Image (cartoon, rainbow, N blue to C red):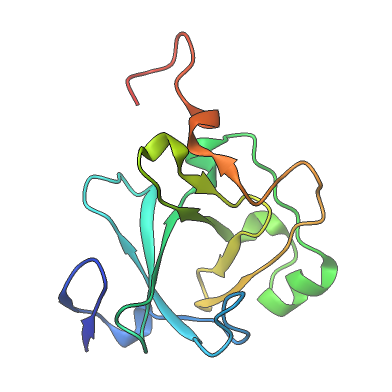
Length: 151
């Protein structure tokens, strides 16, 4: 299928690659289907949730583990059941970003990740009960530290 996108122009996608959000995303409950598209040069950590219905609606997302390797999101028993898994570790997690200039002022939402069951293609956004994660973590919080590699 042909998909008109906010960041990539018109692209070819397989309908089977769509992620289904039965409840939509917070504030966008009517949007039930998205494609997860990688940004070139993002090395799989910088992605885009592109609406299948609305070409101008796309959310920049990141792999939270690339920012915070000790990120440990835990879903409730009800959320796990809805997602069709027994453990949070059986799901993929993505954090939504608000991109600003300069980029270090951009924020990621570790409190409300998007979770994806890669086998069923079902997805949902959750609010984690763990109070140590917030909705507005500055990207600069995750900057390089002494001894880190070049990224």
